[in-house]
Length: 353
Image: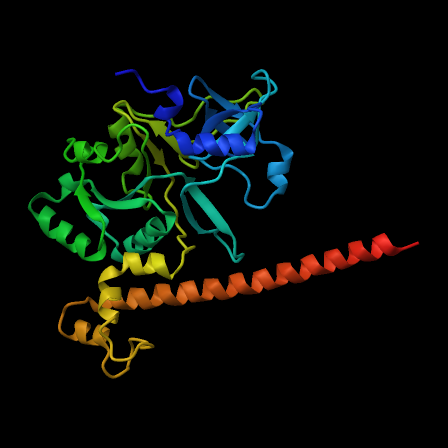
């Protein structure tokens, strides 16, 4: 059997080939994958070499057009000195959140991910945060898995802890991993065969980078090589796509203190599939699941089938998504008004003598 082409090892397939042809019929540009996203610098791999590049100015001016780690891009230029990212290919999946702060902006954390490994530290499990992370993972279009890290710290309590996680991680497989003694690493590796990309998310201190180091087989350097202008990229604040020695790729992400949702009701239904299933048994189709008679959710809480705190978290995330939708609608209306105002000014300018 012949070896896979270098781009295929990075996840390139026939679909990307079609996107390349659509964007660049004359094939003037070469495809590459973004492996590291820093401040005003992107490291890309074209199947042969990795290079630190900038982006063409038109990508900076287009809303949401800047590449992120995991993206496929087209690179122009005839030499290393004049190479630049010219075009961003359509994303197959995107792990996103609401950007920190008051503005209603989407922040893409990782692109073209097939598997999301949600790391939950065994010594400090946070069920409510895990529910948020799983909602984002389901929204991305990738397949989520929960990885209970530092499992060696649990001893005889491991199975009990895994059962607690499974109550929260409905629909997602739960794995126990110890990067210290290697337990569970082969199960994670099996999720990342050649051409498959996984993203590792979770709070700071969850052991994400340690897990990546264990999968790679050595410690990654904290800082990558600097560019000619002496600007480096620090991996603790950057998203880093790393090839694995046995195939596949894994994308390390820094811990995120603020994890505001950027998702829809479908993602929430997937993350809370157990609650969503029970809502179908309610007497009224528009049941708010709070005080209504014949509410199956309330009955499930009373008889112990659903955890009260989980249902409260479900309500909270519903309110957050509803608020996000309202803000997005207001913003869309404001942008539409600005667009018509701009068109009106342009029309007046054209008709002036």
